[in-house]
Length: 283
Image (cartoon, rainbow, N blue to C red; front, side):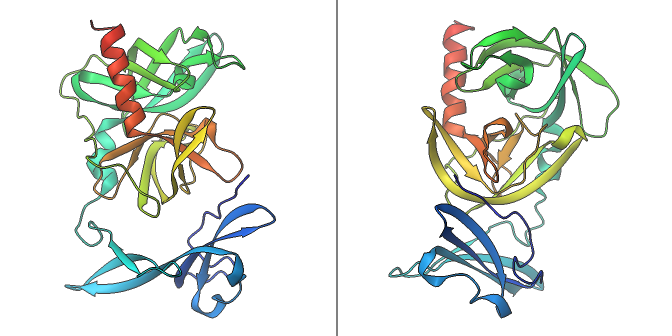
C-alpha cells in the first residue's frame, strides 16, 4: 500500500518555498514529500527513488515552473510545462464541458461528475449511475439521473445509454443544443507530469484540483489505472482528468483509490469503451 502527501508546503517545516518533491520508501510504503531548501536533508537519501527539482524562472516577466527529473546515473531531463505563463486556464477551458451529476435511487442520492464528448453524449463512472454488487455487477440503474452545469441552478435529465461495470464507465445522453465537448489528448500522460481534475468535489459543486502523475500505469483487478496525487474526493467520480494543455487524458475514478492514492481510468481505456458502445449500441 502506498501513501501520497498532498500539499504545497514543506512536509517538515511548513514553508511554501518548495525546492524538491522526493519519492521515497519507508516501511514498505511509497511516499511523496515536499521539501524546502532548509530541510532538503531530512529524508533518507538511501531510500529515494526520484527527486523532482522545482525551480521558478522568469520568462518575459512571467513565472514559469520547470519540472526536472534528476535520477541517479541519468542525464537530467528538463520538462517544461508548456502552459505555465501562457495564460491558459484549464478550468475556464473545460468548465462548460463538465457537469455535476445526481443519481436517484429511491430515497437515496448518489453524487458524481460527468463530461461531454461529441454528439451530446456524456461520460461518467458506472458506479455514479448504478448500484454495483461486491462482484462488480449491476444491481440496478438509477431511476432518474440529473445534471447541472457550472454555477447554474437549472437541472437537466440524462438518458442512460450504456455502462460497463468492469471498466467502471458509463455513457449518457444530454438532449441540449450547443454543448461543448472536451478535447482528447493525442499522447498519454506520463509519470511526473502535472494533471488537473475537474468535478463535483464532495458534492459541493464544480472545482478544479491539481497534482502529479505518480504512476502512469498500474494494474488493479485486471484494469489499468493512472495513479495521481490530486486530492479527488467523493463526487469527483466520473470527472475528466486533464493535462496542462487542458486536454482529456483520463476519467477520475475516486472510488478506486486506497488511503492516500487516487486513480484515474486512462484515455485509452475510455476509447476502448467507446468502441464497445459503437458495436453493441449503435450497430
